[in-house]
Length: 317
Image (cartoon, helix red, strand yellow):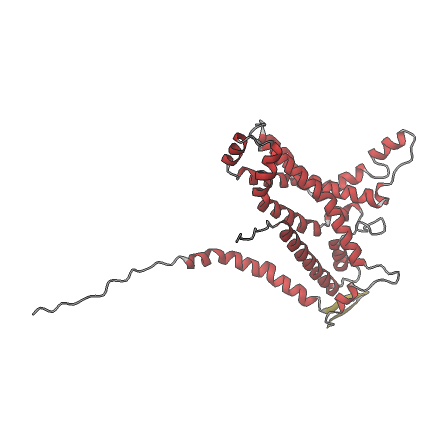
């Protein structure tokens, strides 16, 4: 009688590639921790301390808890809450520049990517509309400051007709409009390129099918282009919002850091810069302002994301 041995089937050796994913994201995680997470935690930590300079005397660092935050939200003697005013100034100038920027960029992106229009020389137009983004904000600010100054070319034209010179930077809304227009001019080209890339990524067969079905341009835009472009549009709005809340260089140069008239053009980052580079060098208050700016950015970004998120239809019973 011969004995037979039933050998167990050989197990297949599975190769796991998961470790390579961790390997490739390790540089990003390391850079994020060193350059973003640690400074963020350090900023919050410093906001809990009293640390400023009074004349030649350095006060602190002394732990004061949330006193810096309490001071930020304490109204002045005249009842004015400065951090609220700075937030309103920042958001107002951002909205004045961002809404025309996104609308104009979306219009240009649709026109340049239209198969019906077939505009020639798109490479040239892309270069031209993106070019303002390559110019330094300080150069733009100095240019417009000279144009709209009290003795600039605009006022020279006004006075040449016998009218009184208009002091653009002494009027709240003219100063805000100039700052908003500079930001619009600088960033609409970048927004246009991003939206064009999003539209070009949409399957062209959808547009062809809509054309065969007799859909007009408005129907194609609102039923096909805009819904499918929504992810990149949300990205554009949120990044524009973050950049707007960090508005600093243009109003800083236009108003020479004063935020005039009557601090109506002073932004949150200008106030933050004043705490760091002022005579007091109040690092604790600057840290508290940074934390408040981070919280405002997170809340507004979340609101934009949720308000533009497509609604899921409930399952029909």
